[in-house]
Every structure is written in C-alpha cells, then in structure tokens.
Image (cartoon, rainbow, N blue to C red):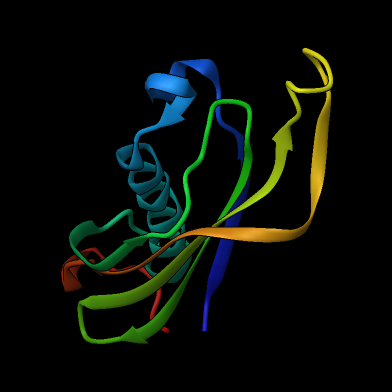
Length: 129
C-alpha cells in the first residue's frame, strides 16, 4: 500500500528536557505530517487524525539527531485509513569528538513504532483508491 517518509534534523528548539532530550510529542507531531501527506496522496484531502494506538517509544532522541519517519497505509475502509509508523535515528552528533562531529549510524535505531487511524469524510474524497 501507500508509504511515505521524511528525514530531518532535530534542532535545539526541539529539546525539551535536560541533556537535550527531545519530547516524544515532537515525534508524534511528525507522524501527523506523514499521515497528512499519505491522505492527500490517497484521497486528495488532508483528512483528520482520529486516534493513535500502540505507541511505543523505544529509544531516546536528542537535539542534533537526524531521524527518518515513515508511515504507510495498511488498511483502507470507506472513510478510515489505518496506518503504521516507524521513526528511526539515522545519524547523531559526536560532541565527545568536537562541536561539529557527527556520525551516520551503520544501522538505524528504531526509536518509535505506532499505529493510527485517520478519517477522510466520503464527501471530501477526490480520489478513489
């Protein structure tokens, strides 16, 4: 089915807790953007996020980390779209070496997995899958 991913760097403005730890809510907001794009591509409408389920925060993320958020539609009903999401850390700063050192990770670290349901009202759907 449809999938979409985005990559971005978490900034100092994303740090919410001590030690530059990024709030999990920032990652959920990113999943909302991924879901919105999937709905636009699938239905021609932004739709609405109905619910998250099975949200698992698996590893911390920090300011300066590069992450990739991926989502895919796994089930499409008349108006509902069930999605699965995964966020992976793909690069990290190396402050122990210098202010500007960073490493691309040999293997991405899965930091979040979640499921969600979005709804696109039937009268707003412009594409029929």
